Length: 434
RNA sequence: UCCGGGCUGGGGUAAUGGUAUCCUUUGGGCCUGUGGCGCCCAAGACGCGGGUUCGAUUCCCGCGCCCGGACCCA
Image (tube, rainbow, N blue to C red; front, side):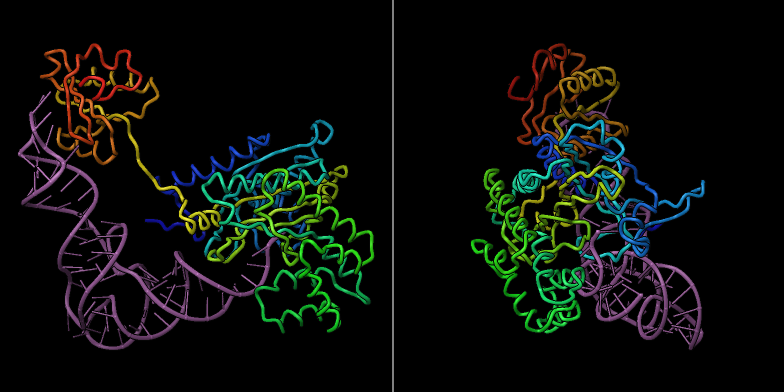
């Protein structure tokens, strides 16, 4: 016996069925918005992540030297890869580029609820549009996917913010402020004690008075965003607020405004976000961590050596998504379904196989004995796979040119001429011959 | 990397310093013809290593894994 590697999971049929259904739902929503599927490598140059996020990041990745002496990493996220792909074909691709991809990613981190070392996400990205409608479309794909899974808009909430509002406000304060540290502090606001939160902001360069003022600004409600513009008095904050308002207006047009709430304390950890950022949360708070997030990252493509290309995306992860669905009671139940079981008694293999083939050709799920089992054991098995109809192909019936059709739920059965089964019937059942 | 809890057949459990209970499950048989039931038979466990002990599944230590949390979340 070998153990499974920590943080990696096996998915047996019952769980896989639920995952398949969930992934199909999310992908079909993306397709409906015109996103095209891409497939990407599991390995990328480790340098790509180091350049983007610093050498320290390699500590959290699966990195190794391949036989050709290349430093490679198992991909921890998709964004650098799609950025690389977009840059490679930037002249050829018509804009906007709209891509999606579902696949595993790997990070060497502590296993916790909703967090594994191998995890699956569907990334949905738009390149080449800086319009608020693009941000809103990404939000809409995410919201439609969740409702498609059976959640209603009251089950989840997108907390929406804007990087330039935070950055712009911080820049408007007197004195030197470490924006990155301050943004990190904001991100922690809900998790730490007020004193500690204030201390973090003070460390970032704000005075005690400024901390209070900043905190008050962050609590500004949606209908008074103009006050932020007035406070900062800068083009940057004015533009950011205007942009955020247009994104929310576009979200209204797309019918997903109800799922969005303004939350200036939502910062997202990722440094590459430049505009609107959002995170999806469980409305009940029962799922304590962020379900997934997304946002605008206009500078990344240029940073990868491409032409300036605005981009916005979202990446639902299935580990946390399943937690949310389970909490809401909409995680798919496995229902093993089999349309027909073709039961063999005696030397009837040829006829049984012909019937099974005919039924499969009609698109049905059909099983037949592959274990040389007895009549009773076959019936047991048919029951265990929830076969709707059992076609009994036995020597005695066959001598009379007949097979027996048994409806499992009721136990009713009837004789059918073997030559007319399945005949012209698309989906023959007991009722058709009773 | 750190903190807390846990680990007995595939799943769920009981007891125990002297190798383990029950349920379920799985395979086979009764069973080449009404047999989805039932009955019978069989299979299957103390996470790994070390220590204490005459003897450890039980007590101690380390590790592994699982669950939850912190950090982190690019």
